[in-house]
Figure 1: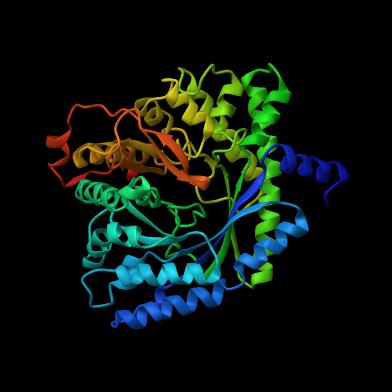
Figure 2 (figure 1 turned 90 degrees about the vertical axis):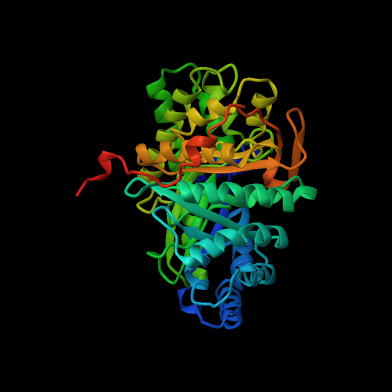
Length: 452
């Protein structure tokens, strides 16, 4: 039972500190939609998504009004389309992307994730066709998001897949050049991808999941920053406890909303992803949390240590509050979606190299970073390979969402609007890794992957 004090505290978090439920994401299995006739498969996909998610948006809006808790996004994730479309005898998967987009529009969600392939150890024909279809799929749809898993700790790093995806990223940037290459903002390249992530653009419905499930993603950078400020000049152990207790409160609200939504929609509740996901709004920034902890500027020496403390405390607080914490859970550091990160880049405090170091201890990786449009595909492949190596050798999820903005150069900016925000073009090391990445093949799994 919640006390009056706890209720008033939550109201303050919502009104003054930007607390929200970032997303309710319905995961839907499309495995029963596979058909040798791709048109029939697309119709099955549209029918199943609209049937199961038809009340998702209304349910979320109703709960938001009843609880006084903003629910920013209602989204859908589906079975990786490479698995579903492979039964169809077609050379490309544009029709599947169109079916997903139409279904998402019909039910009113802003994004649908799952135009995805899992190729960490090799390709099937369907995997290759899906990856090659990504540029046109993302440039011709509004709501479809894509992801590719190129590495796992158990399998190693598939450099052939990374090379293919780097070229896909470049092509996607060119096809959406008139919108500052926004198509790349809807494409994530993963290592050790989780199957229950509710956050876009990397969400898909894993093969170990039930037919339909509700996952929630909470967010509260402003709440955590406020708690740290109130704590004052305490030692780092006490600071960790402060963050942990705050994450506990945020997680309880996320699970309450998720379970209520699942009950009303008649589907199982899955997980609550306890991630500090920032927005471009002032006061809703992970970078500002790190600065409140004591950094003059995010990106200064000490940023990785501060982020490690933050990420660990958030996970511990979430695990205390719920037995169903999953997804990514921790702290996101997307540049374009975080006002403090943008400011740090503008001031020269935060570079790609420092961001890469910070990804060793955060939830994901190099996220929503914009680079010059003439950045070679081989350099993008090397950036992805570095992130994959951090994930594989540290047994954690890492990812890259990079925007080589067509026609843009250092000093320019990209403008996406909404939660995707805006970002300065960041400098990229000009020395080449072409000979390395063109070797192809697979970087073997680390010795500590042999755990059986």
